[in-house]
Image (cartoon, rainbow, N blue to C red; front, side, top):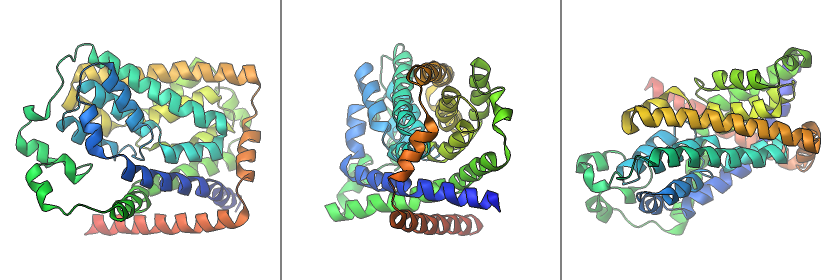
Length: 352
């Protein structure tokens, strides 16, 4: 019974912030045309890498959603460096994961997480770009290949098709953006979010603090979190409740950050795409950057936590206190309904 109570409590604490993040994400999809990204990411040099990291960081794409998006960018002219940068920054953070990080982990972790994600993305892109002086142009791809992946917007594909499509109004775009986040994105993350919240509730209910305190700090804790995170197929949003369970059970903030960075960015599917589309050398740089920068920010996080004597439990409680009861109940019911709808739709789709 206590396990169910803890699960419900965690769900209700995260629901308002997750709904806020999803709403902002839907609006951003309207305001940031994907063809604009493709235009700016094809040039060689560090600027395209920085732009890719900054473009990708707030986008509400999970580990699975970033794969077709990155493939579409690559085949629309983005360089190897920019594609690598986008592949790292996008799943590691987003407006939805930042908002739920603020609710469950406090403001410090909500700030350090996107900073670390953007830094690792830029570092990887710059390293890849050192020998990637010739960007992959859209013209170098066969027409069929460029049109094969309509992953972002119809505007990224062939002009002949574009002429046949009615130009959508702002209202149409807004509805489509919110549909993307409330329906499509929730469908992608619902199962993993339930798993993440369930794992956090299990830790909170059954795992004593002393058990994790024995390996919750130091280099070995970072290694363990990286080994756990690399094969996991989990998005940044769903990894947050797991991270909260680890943090409040004795794992150091730095090791928790390593898990939140490595887990979403290094699943098997993403690494397969990097190897196939960008090559073995890029894959090696990709993994080294994600893990290496993750470790560096892990040490920095632990140092700052000690220096400033942070109390993460107090920070999280302060964030929870900002949510009034009617809003909490309303958003929880709405989010639960969207998740059930998404899971049922996914089940019917797989059976059909």
